Length: 140
Length: 140
Length: 140
Length: 140
Image (cartoon, rainbow over all chains, first blue to last red; front, side):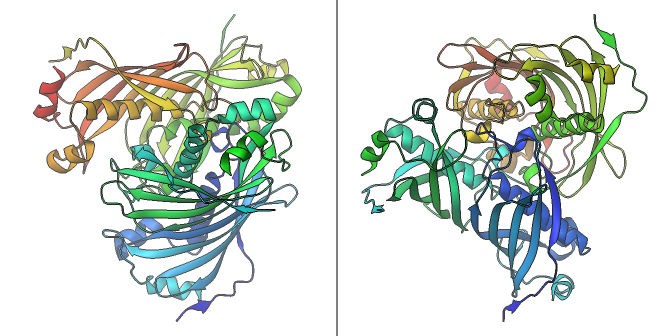
């Protein structure tokens, strides 16, 4: 059974654009938004009290991405600041769906928007494994 | 008018997995597939005789990604080899759609599969601009 | 004339280790320390009131690295936290020398230590150009 | 005992500059040369018949970088090509010293030049371990 999860306010994580994030077009390189989205998911988990290295060591699980749908809408330049939201939209036995938005901080312009599906897997063989109950109960 | 483009055989580009491509899970980091797909698109263009720096300098255009849909199916480890296909599936005035697959070389296992939409834009202001005719005519 | 600059306390910038920073060895990838050091230099400049995009737009200069000497002493793992120091040690017309240390936050273990030479250059042609006075006077 | 190793001709590995390698300055980002140098070392090892995943699985060792001294001399732009040399200059029980140069292919301009020290370590605990004899004998 898959549950729709109605979180009221999304979690936000601020990110500064350094040279490492940009490319010769003068803007953030498209693949780097996936790094930014992951930072926000990690910090969202941390804000709930979960550390991924502890989940791996105590429960034997890691989270892997199984699909991403992303639209790029505006570019952001070197030294500007963005913020990335993280909202859990669906939760089933071993998967979590997230809706994430990257916005330029100073004017709220949407830079990119993504739907990302995460699977909880065994850290050794990468086979799906139920999300630990301690985390599940926190997300419902 | 948007045309469906029926290329017979996809273009393939080989990629070796170095430490830089992996993460602490022991496999290629999910964002890096977007780098691999772009390498293959760049080399496909080059195989047709087009250099992106020349297109920028002579036609004032660069190509930016407007959307990506990607599914991750298998993982690939450090030091293994993959090959990435690049197939143009649709062409309109300023956009190109690609279907791209990353396969492990030794057994053909599909690692990830993506639909990627590219927009041709003015290199200065990032506004859509028609794909140069010399390139269009080559793709039809 | 080159001046030795005696700053009392170094500037520190905290950094969390995400998957993007690690490699298949399970630890931060060696090239990524150069990213971390640059983040700290950028934030040190910002703490003095200087934004690099403003320096580029108003003074026509950017900063490029001309040499790095780095020693790697300990490894740091996924999800751990480090802090990176930034101390200006020498200042001449167009160059700045920095001493930077990356330390694991929880125990102070030195992860890596570097001497980094920066040159102020013309943003168009990359030729050396004097450091803007407004910045120089702030560093002495 | 440490031996000076007199290789006649250096090994070269070609590298194309993609968007992923560049930054908003329009040139290859300084940290990325460390990736390029590592690709060349990996391919040099492969040219001698050694695969690092096999060395890890059969001998329990991996190679980590213990120090880098690098000078940056010229910049290289998007879509240009470089080649990276790899020359072993010193070999002791558990360490290897390399001299590596990155040159722009079309005119031979030296982009950067580095001395890099590698330590052979136990893959589990990162403690130094002798370089496997099968590899040592190949390098002398």
